[in-house]
Length: 224
Ligand code: NAP
Image (cartoon, rainbow, N blue to C red; front, side, top):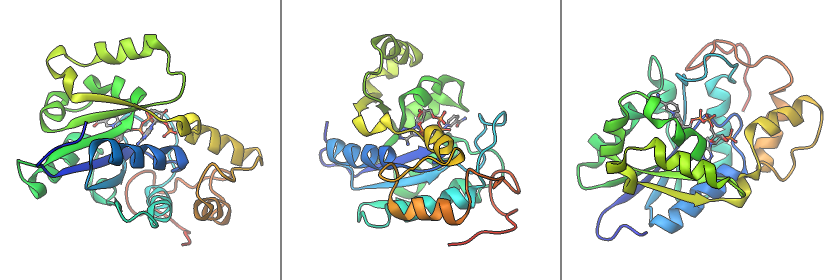
């Protein structure tokens, strides 16, 4: 599974609303399994597929991602999708990184298997499959039928570029954390302590913190 002789970089794409230990374990497990030099976390700025649901303002999600990753020397966080105007298309992010790294670098795009299943509905999916390898992270007990659907979702010619990794810590989910905070249940040990404190201090998931919608700007109050 390791990339030999070529620079290998991971891109960890997600909304991270909020980031949790499942994401961190996924990134670290992928780094170890695929010999990645570093993993760059890229919080979505303006997720094109989420216009039907409220997403926490990008600056909060970005800051939580910085707090969560700060102790791992292999992890970086990029603002590229947050600072980009317009929808956050993965293909633009991959092309930007490809320009910066050159044609020889191996780029691994890491995200949830359910998101990868929808890949062919994303903007310019064939270019994504040409420019990078994909790592689809699954939760424990991911049904065999879903693996089948995952395989069928990707054209046969590109199937070898899609890898799966099972991450037990992905039993944790962002939606469950949001629900827990809203109903006053604890989130300790589901997210790093710094993220837990930041969520409580900023009253995230208990009141509207979507001012300005997605992307940059628009916040009336924000604390670090
Ligand atoms: P999502 O649909 O909210 O998530 C689908 C599933 O994947 C959820 O169970 C989610 O769990 C999990 N997941 C998401 N990111 C993960 C990660 N990095 N590691 C492990 N599990 C992860 O997915 P999303 O977060 O909005 O999007 C995922 C990535 O795909 C982003 O980088 C996004 O920009 C990209 N994407 C691009 C396009 C496009 O270019 N048109 C369209 C769709 C998605 P949690 O909720 O617990 O995270």
